[in-house]
Amino acid sequence: MLTTHSEFFLQQLNNAILAGKAGAAAANRVDLHSERLHADRVSAYLFDQRPTGTTVNRLNVSPDEGIPESGFASVAEVLYDQSVSLDKAARRG
Image 1: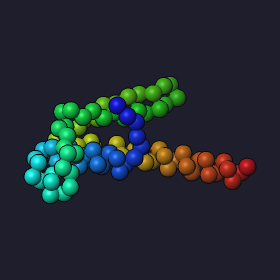
Image 2: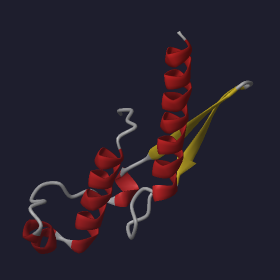
Image 3: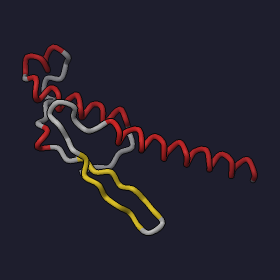
């Protein structure tokens, strides 16, 4: 189990899931020799903080697409909003 906000890491997980479906020969052609995963062995969760508490939503991990990229976008949006707020606060002193 691990936590991440890295789109790159999540995309690499998706590549490993796709490599698991495609098989060893296809994975070897793109240098994913041992990085093959089966979608049914991967779980992904999106933690959504709200004023009333945190909700945890399990994301559907598909053998055809891996972890849905919509989860990537929402995490990037939250991080961007935090950066903008912190930048504004820092400029105000």
